[in-house]
Length: 163
Image (cartoon, rainbow, N blue to C red; front, side):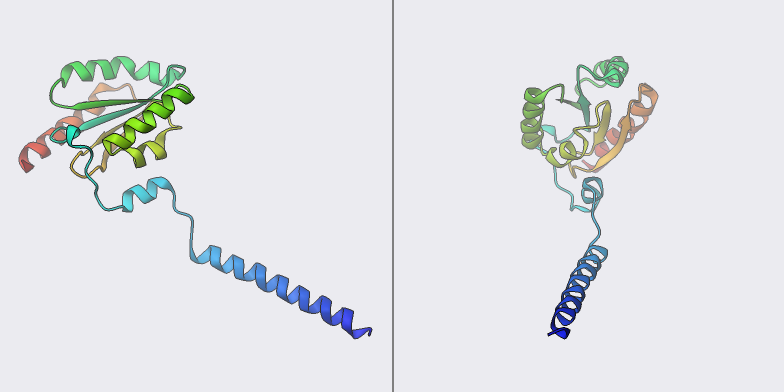
């Protein structure tokens, strides 16, 4: 009888360690992939038809965000400068209601994956190729209009060559 508890204890210990080691090996063989990494490896998926033909500038905005207030004049200038040449999309995440509306809007426009990856990153502005849905350039808290202009002009030029 004295060997039975020792045998059971040893068996349970081996089974436990085997389970732990087995779980560890599963975790090592299948690493976590971030949403941003997943976006980069996904096959290109065009945005909504209403966004085609022009680069898309997406702004993750919140009324309470100081960074958003800092970049607002730059984005306003860009909207005037590129009127009719660029699609501007604002996804407002100021509160639960506006975030829900922004999520719906993002889904309708083909920006759901981008929105999911960036909805907590206010003051994020991305220039996206509507034909592929891929981010050309992404900025955070950047009020320098020249940075945006360079990327937007390049995107307009590439799109004109491809059409």
